[in-house]
Image (cartoon, rainbow, N blue to C red; front, side, top):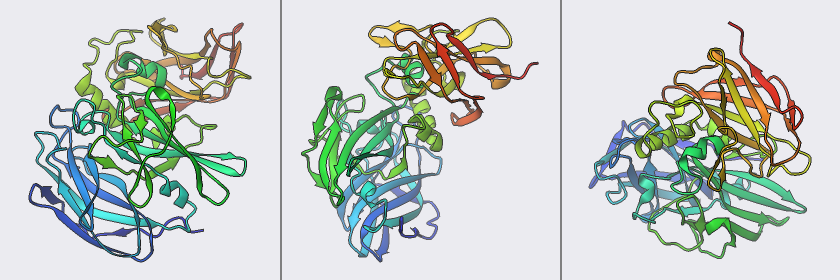
Length: 441
């Protein structure tokens, strides 16, 4: 079965400048009808780390009609921005890219595009249903008309597929660059192992004929709502970013929007959601840059202090907690001992409570992520051992089947990585087990 039609690429444009009064028009022909994915190799005269200089925005038009906006969050580094134009019939088309002065940061006046590539997902494709139901997301405008140009910007859409008898559910999740509310920022690393915000936003149930019989979204206060909103760009469901921590509604309240392609399928039984971030390292970088701009890092870095430090001082952990009954309320700690000194560094800061928040992960997924803050410059060569530690409040026995840990490199991209050497079990009676041990000096 055909997955997608071959990609078509424009000739190199030689980094064409786009600014007010200087748009870029691209003509293309579709040999078959389908959902069109466009790939813009672009860069911006901007820097996500610098206030009022964070990004530029391109507004896309197809046949002269507004399609969507593309926020260039990766600065002056060339980057492939992939978006869906929606369902289009076969034929001749013109794509126009305009610099959007209103959405772009105040001190940014231009962007550059090197090439444009597109492909068509046809109705015969096994991916067609996944693409067809990907939601149009209108940008957030709670305190500013175009907040996503500088904060909590959507970075990537991914999906999971669940069989439900003779039906199939597709759930879409988005990675935002951060969340301005929700889990307190100092605790994001301990509880989630990241400073991005990952939220499911839309779920559709299809019958045996592939027709939608139910559609829901994650509404305000995490209350699931039934989607009764409009559709756009050839039938895609429409949602609106409506909270400072990734919740949505089905009523449009802003005038800028995005349509991301489903970038990857996620298997929650085998991997945490953060494994998607590993496959798209820019998600770590953009979130880290946002932290540098919005939250002054702790100086100096204090051992076992929950205050946020530069993200390069953390060991990022991907792990699992498998229990017989109650995984949701069961937590484990990850602890690190360096070769020099007798201090144990804890991912949950000793199972710290901060108001109503528990620093350790106690969510519904067996696969989860956390992080351990370590002294600046620490590498795996400095670590004597890493342990999984049982914590009270859940089941008395927890299987830890796998373990992965890594540091970010100087560019805030995933770097040095190690893996556990086999499953371990932590219990109330034997709460500590080694998951990784460094080489002796």
